[in-house]
Length: 267
Picture 1 (cartoon, rainbow, N blue to C red):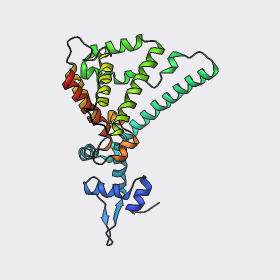
Picture 2: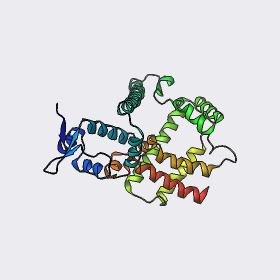
Picture 3: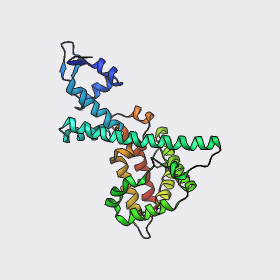
Picture 4: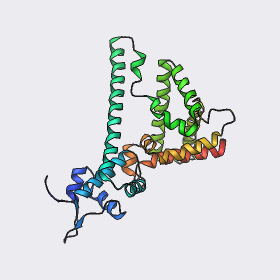
């Protein structure tokens, strides 16, 4: 489709969104149309399409609309920003491909009655990718302790731990989708499980004797909302469909609020 401008209906169809969403983006100043016709219709040029692509990419990362507006305001180089997005997407593509191959290997081995190679079961689940971040936040000893703990576990223990994390994330999303209050018994039971999980990981401030568990939990709750990776982790299609200006942070905000209630009452 070689043209200079597209109507709002065309853009909505091409981007897999709705005219209503695009009008909302215009109303909040996130994506103004490049021109408005005599009939009042909005039209978008190539620069607007590039901006919309970046908005959709940032939504996929879990950012809410206010955060997306901040990112777009700070970054002026559209091409360099897209290159950064592309690099991240390729990294995620590689990680997911390795996870798919790892799980397929396990399934094939189980179906064929073969022995499972432990070193093949966790490819794509590499915790060392967060080494620099952990050391910056909590120190080199924190990473060393947690890394030693992880490497000391058997394949079955690692699988059980991964399942525990997966179940907890699934239950948080289900609770957020159900619309229960952060201070409800169900949400507080989840918060208790979450804190027990955190305190069970060596090297974290929550596991150290005399450590500031309350401060650690409250800080993590805020990080869950601020960091798009956690926004995506605690989000779902149902939550994103109901989102307006909060984008993909609704689930993370629910987790943060429930943890805050639990921390104030029990930590």
